[in-house]
Length: 109
Image: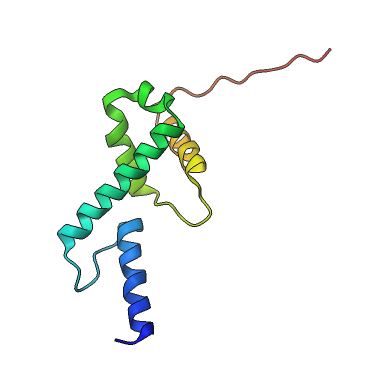
């Protein structure tokens, strides 16, 4: 196998793991699916650590909602976990799962 072929297979595997694409030929789809679940669980745990208000507000709904968010919005280069947590909160708000934040107005002197 050439380096170019190996690089193409690695890229296809990463797309399957991170963007939910089909498992590449030669990879066990069940194992790829299990790894996707593990990576999403890790991502959700990190978001929960960064934004404990979200699992507190959502309770048992946190994990299924996060899984739906993660499936719809894979992480990409340049998106850190803090931004991912903020994006998840915005996603929840847009869908009515969380109330819209109140705007605070400051009166000038």
